[in-house]
Amino acid sequence: MALPIFKPDLLHLFSISLFLFTSVSISHSHSNDFCEAGALYGAAGCGISPPLSSAKLLIKGGTVVNAHHQEVADVYVEDGVIVTVRPNLKVGDDVQVLDATGKLVMPGGIDPHTHLAMEFMGTETIDDFFSGQAAALAGGTTMHIDFVIPVNGSLTAGIEAYERKAQKSCMDYGFHMAITKWDEDVSRDMEIMVKEKGINSFKFFLAYKGSLMISDELLLDGLKRCKSLGALAMVHAENGDAVFEGQNRMIELGITGPEGHALSRPPVLEAEATARAIRLASFVNTPLYVVHVMSIDAMEEIAKARKSGQKVVGEPVVSGLVLDDSKLWDPDFSIASKQELALYIYCCCFFFCIFAILYVMSPPIRALGHAKALQAALSTGILQLVGTDHCAFNSTQKAFGIDDFRKIPNGVNGIEERMHLVWDTMVETGQMSVTDYVRVTSTECARIFNIYPRKGAILAGSDADIIIFNPNSSVGISARSHHSRTDTNVYEGRRGKGKVEVTIAGGRVVWINDELKVSPGSGKYVEMPPFNYLFSGVDKADDSYLASLNAPVKRSKSVS
Ligand code: URP
Ligand code: ZN
Ligand code: ZN
Image (cartoon, rainbow, N blue to C red; front, side, top):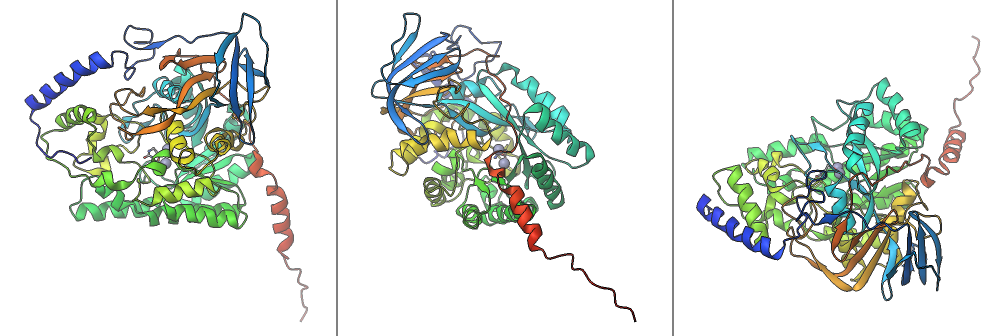
């Protein structure tokens, strides 16, 4: 939808917002958007109430779907754990029964890539560990893995900060950790993180020059250390030096709007960094995980490496799978101040207008065609699992960069929308089976981060993280009804087939009848052990490499 081009004055804005406030208050009196953990939790109008906690639960008559099998069966849960999966179970009166006849009973989603309460680009993401997780649960995701950002390079200070942030959690979560500098302390602390803190993955940013970006030398040190610890190395793959050059080029050309963001960091820079990271991981012989694969170019580097037998995991994110960059070229409008702009965006999101700055993330959302190719790569196994990179900012924060794209906080929402959008895009279109849907939204993440089958499965002994999904229903996406704290939604106005009707997290019914029932502090930290399945065979490959060297060559000293 095209953006109406006019210059709003404050009176105009005020009357729009008054009208909207009134109509929204009437039609969405239970909106959860701005619920605050602690402050508003349980308050009238917040719409979030404590969980329905029955220690015993029976999900009856649904089709239970795992990554490799589906069958009609009942699922019996006790004290947060799945006890039995079998048809026609009989239970006592003390058991809460949920009828799932005609519906799919699937493992709750696991989002491998989120940024809750992250300090970034001079601000902090708007969703914290309560609001972001509440949104996730409303969309059928029952666990996520967030990125701990070190404090001044210190891993121990970083984990302490994130442990504090996560105290208000209402669902299970794990941590990856970014590595932003290199010295003996960092190398030592990586071992502490793995052995004492349950972190089994470290992320290296090849972009964000001047803040998170690291050098190739650091990447090599980090890859070697990851390998020795059995931790998975992850990369944000864009060439940060070239992006910096691209940004300067855009500014010199007078391109300061959000289209400059995409133009300054084209697919070739994503492909270059992806290829470089893949080759360095091959040189070290350690598995590699490429986060947010956004372009055909990067995806093809992953495909080539996998075809050659290298252990490389590629993670597309929902925004890359379903959006295209046309929004970034939406015509801009002149505006007197950033405050006015924020108010204008806030008002207009109710009219489904498109605002270019909302779509700024890195790597950028690509031109038409990339998303379709990424979908095909996901359906054929070139890419393995879907994340969100949920990194939400509100319209005021996004407006920081209205006259300079370099200042727009990078990131989009998605934690609540992922399960629905992947279903609609992949399963409804016939590109993916229901079992593969479970694999890419849950099971593969659990396997890669070494928590399967505790997570990612509906099996006796697994955690009772379960969704009841109605494939014959549908959902609409809007900032008016979502549960994230952000006041906009990059998927605004989309409707899709399929609906998460019930979410069960740790055996508690937390989402039912379109209502959230969550409490801060109920989520648990999930420790993830090192040496996942990707590491099997690494030592044998090292041995055959050493055997192949035929070196050092023994030379006899000649006497003259
Ligand atoms: O734009 C993005 N992706 N923001 C979050 C930080 C990152 O690069 O993952
Ligand atoms: Zn990134
Ligand atoms: Zn990210």
